[in-house]
Amino acid sequence: MGDAPSALNELQALRWWLGDLRATVVRKAEGLSAEQLAARSVPPSDLSILGLVRHLAQMEHYWFITTLSREDEPRPYVPDGDWDAQFRDAAADDALVADAFETWHAVCARADAVMDSLEPSDLDFVWDPDDKLGSVRGALLQVLYEYARHAGHLDLLREAIDGQTGE
Image (cartoon, rainbow, N blue to C red):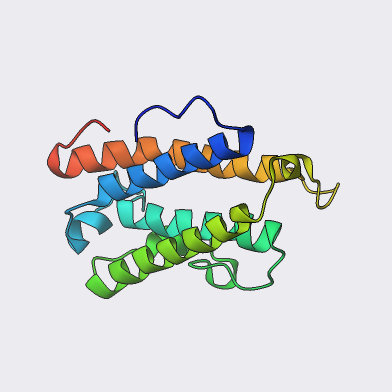
């Protein structure tokens, strides 16, 4: 996406960076088969590009839907609190790949709708003083942290699959 425009307020800048990181996920998965998307990194790890897409969907769901919107619904890809399922169950199956990307895109759209309702002054809003990251800003920063961390994993996974490097 290039450099962020210089005339953004803080909320706009955070959203711009989130968009850039989401675009990185798309670029790193582009053109890969179900087998390549589900290819594991280094045994015994279950880390794969597909697993990361599933993880990012559930992570955005948690922060934007469950936490900020206070919607009480199950997190995708974490059945009965089984955190390993989001990676372990990411198999080389076209239907699973389609589901993962459809879920991720749908969650991103819901997250964008939540952020569309925010004003820059909402960043300081604390929904529960007992939450470890109890502000809207804290939630957005946590999401950016997760994407940035996993963008590095995506870089390495993609390079191991077909040698593609760079942005």
